[in-house]
Image 1 (cartoon, helix red, strand yellow):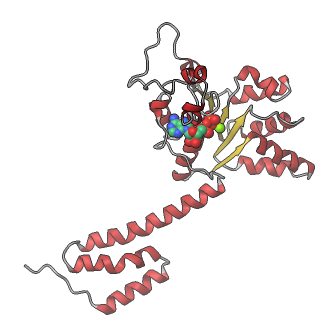
Image 2 (cartoon, rainbow, N blue to C red; image 1 turned 30 degrees about the horizontal axis):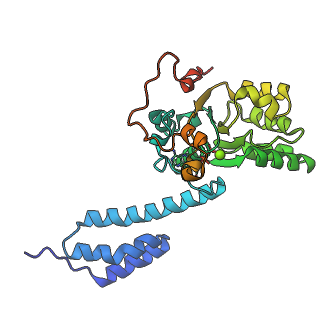
Image 3 (cartoon, rainbow, N blue to C red; image 1 turned 90 degrees about the horizontal axis):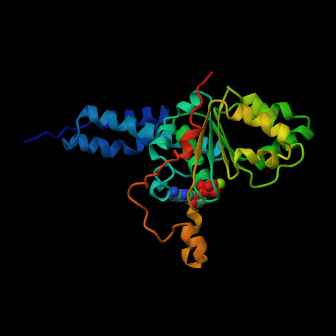
Length: 292
Ligand code: ADP
Ligand code: MG
């Protein structure tokens, strides 16, 4: 049995030069070992070609994603795979996985993640952002305070229009932490200008620990809050998380008993979410208003 093939060294040299000329460093790196597989009869010629191109493509994709994540300011990478859905039974896993298909980005919709601190709002928003980056969409992630800070600075410098245009360029804008910090005077108005500019033109994900009824207080201006919600609840998906803090679960022993039992840290998580009687699931109520 002799399936081995001898590769002429001069051809190999030429391939190396070509790969350098084509700027294919990864293919160049794996060339020798791949050709050895061919010589030993462990891979066909077609498989060798496939390997060289696939390796190069993977390298490029990884580089592109790394760069795009940096541009998106998605510094702490969270993934859907890293999200423990069993810890958050109020959350419908399939619903989140459906969002990860990114149709909401193409439809310029708004996703709201609402819930108490530590329930995974930022994690899920980031994970969807990462999915969007992987799928080739442009993303920008910032806290509300940072966005308003940047808009206020731009306004002082006479650059507001440009700043808003910059924040309208990405197909997905993630605004994290609405409601944690008081909005600076005039901040609600600046944020409204941004939201209005993106309205029906680009998708957004918002996270908040406060209900919509409290937005007047959050933005220090009920009129601005109403105008904001008018845009942000049209073509919107509202995901309400009603669980306990994932952060605190690791410190169960340090927590007072009444908080611990409320956070159900010691109780095993039921394999199936408990059936609710009467009242329909809250997070289903505001689902998907019809477009148009
Ligand atoms: P929130 O934004 O709602 O305050 P985060 O998304 O920042 O909460 O979550 C707090 C921390 O706990 C983060 O490190 C996050 O990755 C982690 N976390 C939260 N929920 C889960 C979960 N269900 N599975 C895995 N990690 C989680
Ligand atoms: Mg958060």
